[in-house]
Image 1 (tube, rainbow, N blue to C red):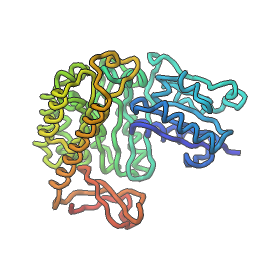
Image 2 (cartoon, rainbow, N blue to C red):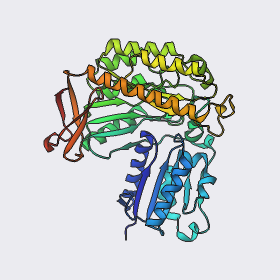
Image 3 (spheres, one colour):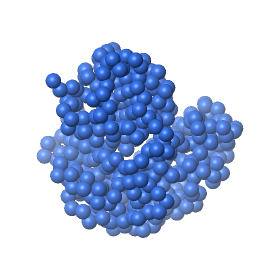
Image 4 (tube, rainbow, N blue to C red):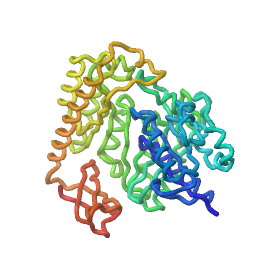
Length: 425
């Protein structure tokens, strides 16, 4: 009799692409995929280390599984599993913890897992992050409209606030041939848009095992993808400002496939704080990248990540950030409240910003983000843009996004599902 499995994903688009690949590997092995809220024989939770309450979130989800299916196996994997395997193993109800190197060996580990082994305590299959080798290509395909395609993993940067290098290992990537093969598969399944994902996407080209020397780079990749038939739209998910070169911007500006939409992490508008964060750029470079994008693509949507409440961030530093973001032509913000992470340089930095001040700064930037997105959307009014409508109607309303990331809603029309329609905003 076939066993059933259900997945739950926390965190980034990269995690979603990996969960989808794990799901397909188990289905190929004979498992029946279930909705996470249904009863299943095995539950797999792919965790994140960026979210503030990874431990609390994990415990809450596991408790829900125990109430719903007390005899089920519970497997925890992902970044949190790599960083805190022993902590996770102590959560009541967890049977197996898989670190970064073992995540894609899930089928093998499930074949060895029985309740007798599980009852002796959670098994940990983790390893030193230095031993993580190879690149595992993956993509998500929750519906035929859009797919998240992982082309790069890991990071060789050492930002003082970040645990990702400890959770994901060194920078490594797929080959261009591998990416194009995945594009062909996705196109055959009817996908219209690909979102390129990675931990440090612009660092593409260090090969399956990583290394200092690049045989190819991100610019090479996007040129090859642009020339590949079958996919109508390609979106770049997030790229570091120091790796977003003028040639990449210029190429996107003239491309018919690459969307006029960039997400460029800033983190702070204060050079003092950027230095303390060990970021590889300063605010002038960021402003220059935004100005170049807008000069070539005035209609382009630009998103930014910002961290508030980093140690040592004074009111004056925050004002620098607020004013900088207010003045430059970005369209929306993803605002993160700084939280201490074990084994990071920032965890020992002083002075610590009180939590209530961190929260106030977060609220101020979220309000600014709302204003900037409203302004950007209003600027597009009357323009004709191409909209890719998505597959699931909500209460009789379907939605889609323009090439430059403006959300459009309209009464459901089945013939428009997974179709690109010219639309006057």
